[in-house]
Length: 198
Image (cartoon, rainbow, N blue to C red):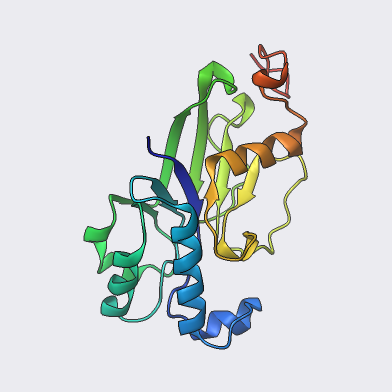
């Protein structure tokens, strides 16, 4: 069975991002190898990864070699630094500027978790009043969001350890902790979401 993972802002091969974001690496080679190792430590070959943009900034050959080493089927939600990634477009199962998912989940409203994926953070998004989540990148952990908002930066700079893709289960736990929602499996009243909507 395929599991779902989410990540953004890998910036493979981008030396300057180390300084811009304070990443703990001496050079881009060290950064790239660490991210590849951590990606493959959690993502299996049959898993699905949604990359929310800014994959890499060196040559197409350099990026293609890295992409070939990464496990999983990768869908790309385009960021503002993806010209090189688009030259490796055959490595991605899909590319789009925005993507909406419906994930089968017994704890979600209607037993489907709606998720809006975009490189950029949104203040509002489709089905927000019915428990939808919005996942983004671009901000490198610097975007302030309301503590109860169902939105999350899934960039590598927010991951622990650094560079590890977030699983659907991790994101669900974080979203429920933010909003005080308890999964049905833990005894919640599942008829309404935390806003009181049906």
